[in-house]
Length: 140
Image 1 (tube, rainbow, N blue to C red):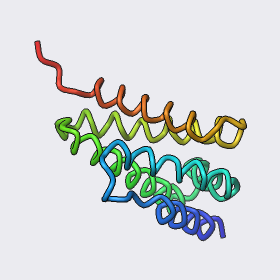
Image 2 (image 1 turned 135 degrees about the vertical axis):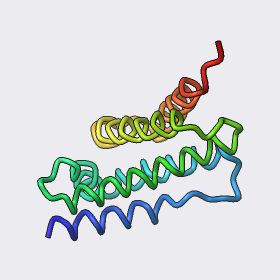
Image 3 (image 1 turned 30 degrees about the horizontal axis):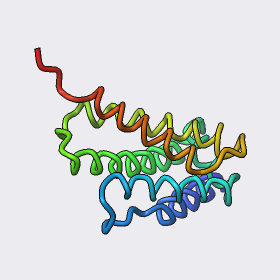
Image 4 (image 1 turned 45 degrees about the vertical axis):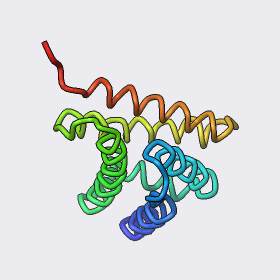
């Protein structure tokens, strides 16, 4: 039963937040994040079951959560690669970690406060940009 709930949550969130390719990279990121905030606020139990599914004792549930995180990370990586950031292992690791941070921000801000969506989104965009900058290759 828990597997089915998490599977439905994953698919619903990924579908509801599919990036709009006609937008510029940063506008696409902002738009997607705005829709994530909307999804989280409209479906708090669904979102919560997804992000907390990683703590499940079920390997199948953990796999579903990791698939969702991987898909979200890939979306963000593509934004920064399109902006000219080299597609490196460092970038992928850093932005995958950003996804975990973004999930926690959604729990704390989108579910735990009445902050306007634009504030939540701008904090996430700023953090993603800083993360991508930090992951840039070091030239010495």
